[in-house]
Length: 255
Image (tube, rainbow, N blue to C red; front, side, top):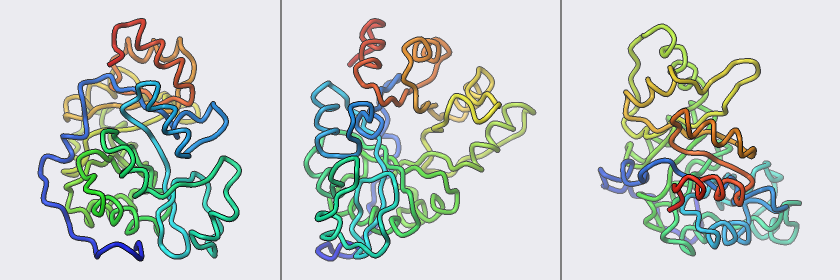
């Protein structure tokens, strides 16, 4: 937990998961727009926000002293936050989650919690900054997501873990009933997983029937972006923020 922050108190904000979403389709700057050469940095986020992005995707780990930092690859587990400042990662300096949430109060962040050690510090930073209705917590790990949902009492928006996505995809094939945790507002998936096509009309139809948006990552080709929008996806995450903005603008979708 952040050393300078008070203990976590679960926010009482029943509308927070729903409040995260705006009218689709949504444009996400993946890691702030990683194609520019830096990623998950304050400079990358500032560049995407200056371009007009309202949704930014990022990754969070925790340092040895429990500070949540925005970085994709795991830092050395022995490094403190001050150590990390002295030896920044190759992609650029890793900012603190609480500092980024404070700096851009009007922006919504899609936060991929990359490690178990980052769960409690992430929630502490959200609580300390009052950012409950403008974050979505994501993870490949179903176990990690269960911890996040329990710690936030399902009051902060989440997406699905890998096994949850697999169950949803299978249900879209066989017509089985499937239920979602109360905080889930979106399913965030690649177009394909290995040889398997994930995002198709059946998958979208079931997700939409359950009230979920479908956000697709990481799409950098304009023709693929256009095809996904024609299919009816609700959001696209890209490293190439100028290309996605152009596709949205050409279709009259850029807000």
